[in-house]
Length: 521
Image (cartoon, rainbow, N blue to C red; front, side, top):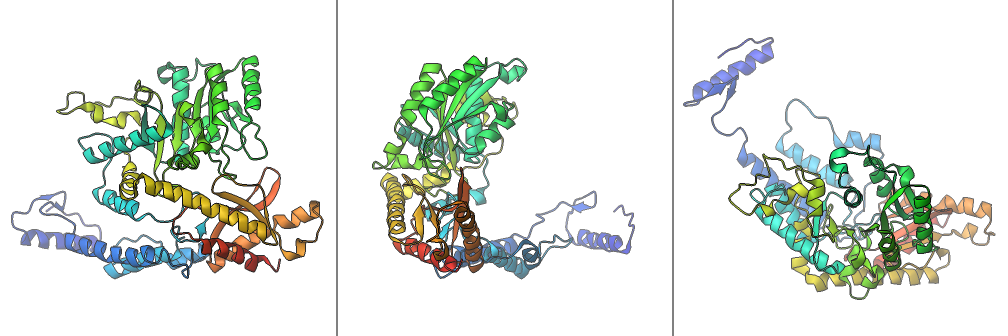
């Protein structure tokens, strides 16, 4: 053994290696490393997985529906850093210490599967999706070629096919992405490639000034995508919306004509089906008419509202979506497939996705494989490694059936309607507008402001109410609900109903708790 120890510690390590080497029959030593046998203790690892799964079952899953548990145990950042012992050390931690860390991480994390977590456009726990995630985390697949991920590629193909049918297309293409923002970026780039295929090789230098159109209420990812792709945020033309947050088609027509007069090249309209704050659905049919007239790609960001397609009662919200060229739809939101589960669906059947994104890596997408290489779909992704996100949605769909998914949507919107009716009955609560989806936007007006004239002072004081109530509920751990100002309106609460664990009693509790936490303001 070669040894050039520079300290007592290194000499001790080398001595230990020598001892192990002497004990190991037929040992092979390379660069001071014994290569015989595995280095990991599989029995200890299996025991850790088993014990950790018990903690997950007890602390996360079984407590999920218990409303007496806290949504979160709030701690300020500096204190939480100390409570969690985040330091990584030279030597590993023992088994029991690691299990305690698991306990602590769960304890201080937000329980998004709690029935009173209303803070985002996702919530709750779907048990079938959760098992699917356990399976994929254990298998650790990457979905790019059939040889390495045969089951999950076929699952993705089956799920995309059914989603395409619900949009109303006879055929199409698609891919699952890490988030609706990425789906919107895919669509923007795809529309640009369709407008100017030379961009893939020549880049931006030879292009005219490209302009795209979207509503004032669109998701912020549209600006991010325009910036990322080199289109520029100044070339995103925001179209005026009506009082409900819907794009006004006549204003879109004016802006398209304005862009042409400026010498720009319009290429894309992004409509929104379910805006983030108000839950508004743009009039897709009228927007599609304008797109057809001007030869523009129509993308529909239905990341939030797309799941209404599963409901025969509510799919009319997306009337005209079949006329879109591409659609973003996130089953991890209303359908609870588990973050992240986001599809970009494309009406084109000429392999446009692959033409746009293909790099033909010869070490991965060999054309002389022993099976049908059309199943190697990874070349139509901007990613190389890609998670099998479709599997979560597939497992839920298999378990509940289409009727079960439809019921999930219908119940969420029925609970939203119940809450709206209760808000109208209660003193001190005021709706911003009648919702058409699961977003309920309202003010809570403390008794001290109820007889005050609605002037600048009133609105200034009301603006301060929601943040104080939010702080109190977070520190109490009773529930989580978001708030925001919006287009000249002072801070208001935005309640979102999603989870089937949510009940009428939770809607009543929400209003009671806000009144309890804010009545002294």
